[in-house]
Image 1 (cartoon, rainbow, N blue to C red):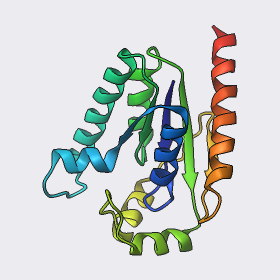
Image 2 (cartoon, rainbow, N blue to C red):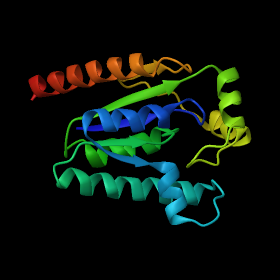
Image 3 (cartoon, one colour):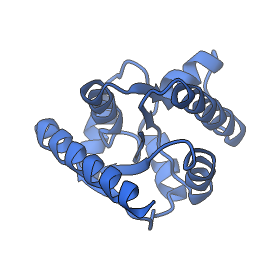
Image 4 (cartoon, helix red, strand yellow):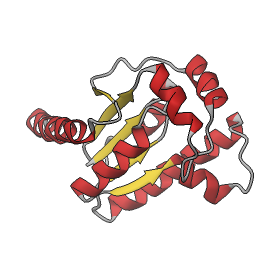
Length: 171
């Protein structure tokens, strides 16, 4: 099972995705960690973003070939990026998408606080928000607050189980 968790910086997607991965026993591949592993200084340039996504894709494919579940955590802000992952991964295992959203007021508050792996600030959020392309394929949308992680995880697990069952019956 491959789960792609997407959303804008500060939405709570990494907090959610890391806990989802632990809950379902999946490998967790986070774009911020990949970025800091690849670059000593981050710029969020288009070429840097492309290299981060390519490395995430390679790591996901290696994990799936080892029969591991994977949770991928990044903005996945354009349809081209989502299509790249869908095309490359759909034949390897069941593929599900979860989008995490939050109120902008809460995002602004979260981005003021230093986070362990991400150096995205409100300016990066605004830049990616401008480039964000709505995702129209079937997926789960979760609204993040500061006190609903358990509900989000419950809803995600239920969705993933249903999504896997639907995929298996379609084959």
